[in-house]
Length: 193
Image 1 (cartoon, helix red, strand yellow):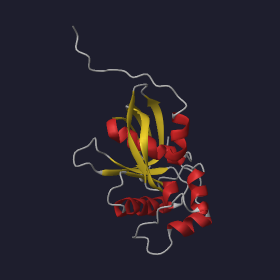
Image 2 (tube, helix red, strand yellow; image 1 turned 180 degrees about the vertical axis):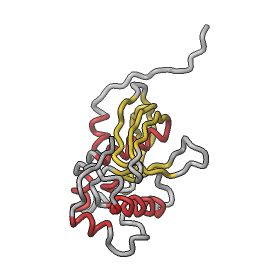
Image 3 (spheres, one colour; image 1 turned 120 degrees about the vertical axis):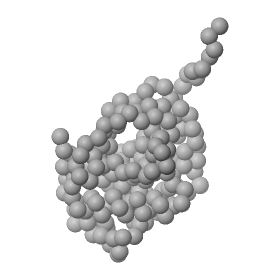
Image 4 (spheres, one colour; image 1 turned 120 degrees about the horizontal axis):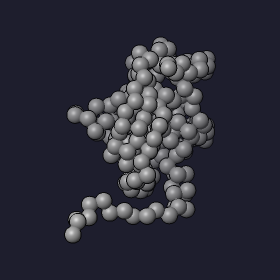
């Protein structure tokens, strides 16, 4: 079933279309109080077939490319609280960038990886986070076609990080909650004796 999303507001359309639409949108930062508020808001679904969605998707990609080293970006990071993300698909040949409209994690493994993460919206902050090793994800493309796939490893980490942004979750806040939990270390590759 096609996820149609809510219509864009006049303010969103104005922001998405500001300046040259063939250029990157600016990346919001937590040090700016108004931008920080946008980063903490929950996002709404987007209409995959809306022409504004296509412009937003393109400008988000340009914003991600402008960072030179970023591996993902979410709608709130360009000031638009819509459920759209871009991720570097390190699980695919040539590691392409791909967008996901209205992504939903349908299932996540209980097996977790602990790895480093940073954030384009939080200057000079890196820490180690637990993320599910494998996820099943559902999303749409700009033609309105629904996709469902199983993703694992670092690509799954990137997707989980960006989907957190859509719920207003920043890694600077997530680390506080993570430190309150206990995790059991599991050794996967023990030799049978």
